[in-house]
Length: 118
Image (cartoon, rainbow, N blue to C red; front, side, top):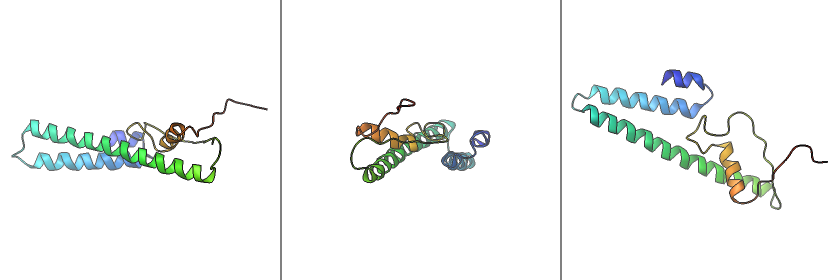
């Protein structure tokens, strides 16, 4: 977990998730009444819950971000420029900034840019 976090030091949500999983493993390990199978199931269920929450959070970020952009530009297509990671390297796959782009695309508001258009 520590190596994973060190590979993506700016992915704050990844560090939080790793810390939560490390704490869970330590808690489960200390309880001698918990079987290995229950430990594994608890760990996997926690990871799946984190995945569901991250995707849900990212979709909400996408909806709210798209609504804010659309509020500034109520008519016609909009173009979005991002930098750094916008998708699945630091999130569960939906993305934060990419989530906004996905939401704009879903509402048919995302304009396309194909290089130099004079």
